[in-house]
Length: 490
Image: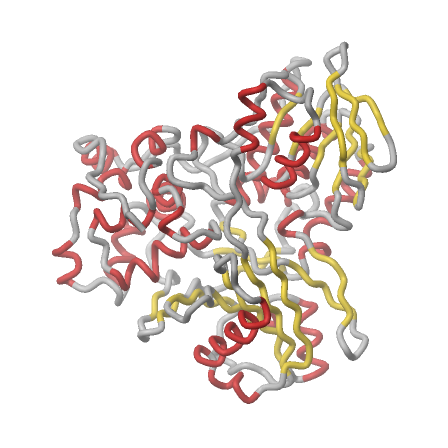
């Protein structure tokens, strides 16, 4: 089997196939594994080699399938470390925290409202509880039937959700998709609410790798795959795929051409569109048209700064921000990553990372770099006197966009060809998963779909419940099938 793309989805698919005795070739055009969660070496001015990446990723404890993938090489997940809180800060001074929020639904949602300073009594009285009822019983795919026609912004308007709480709570979800809430399907936001608040008991606390992504996650998994007879080709792009008369495929890279019994496509939106466009015999016409319509989220910026002095000792490892312009969060890497901690111990400085999730497409990069630094100075004033010894600015625009009304147009794991399957966070599945967990889950599903043809049982999947956990809340949600939402005209 050929697996095209070695991000989380491709690695998950290759792992399950290889574990079941399938000969797998894994192709990745980048010179590293992990896709958008990958890492590569970079040299600082003093000659130190460090690992650069595309930025912070939270490994939430509801990511059962992703964590199952990581357990292949780290059974106790010792290479993940938990951060003590998920703090949020708004420019008006409001602070929120998930550390003391109860984890048991529905106390998790009620506890957040009770403990959050962003919910005032007057705001709660002004809210429209009927419009919020769909959040109480989120089911897939029914939630898309009910809410995919509205934006996250307009849904929150219908609920009369308080502005302060909207910025600090719900926009955390929409910005996780690298999208403005006006352009994100309300169904995706509702699904996230279910996953983290009413559908699971793990809450919003999370783990992070204690070493750079490559060392902690993907290098060990590459060794595991190699021991299972998988050929791993990094830096090798697939240029063409064509079906063969025997039901298989010929896969051509820039260096070689080989026949395979089946193919897993685990690419980002742009890469998938490009490959399908150049492979005229791949898939049927409706499928090819749907692939051609896939959209990409706005560009995002990750700035990593090596400062000559430390940030204040009480600064958290991660802070979500709102109201500070383009700045969405700040990470202090030496708080949790061993490589940054060693640099901090040797130099006395700090390694700080800044995220801007949905930058306007026409933004001038140098201006945005300076603007993001200025916003850091607002949030952490002690950094205004620090010298930036080294800086790396990563710009990318390859995350999938989940626009209003786009769910039915997204591809599924299975295609018209039984041995051509798809995986990735852009792929539609009738399971309550999102982001990195959707990538891992669809990777497992893709492998299972191929193994099924040889009557081989594949990977068991775990998810949060596929409906609201509380019978009383489900009954309340059934009272209002469709929220009254006014679409935003801007």
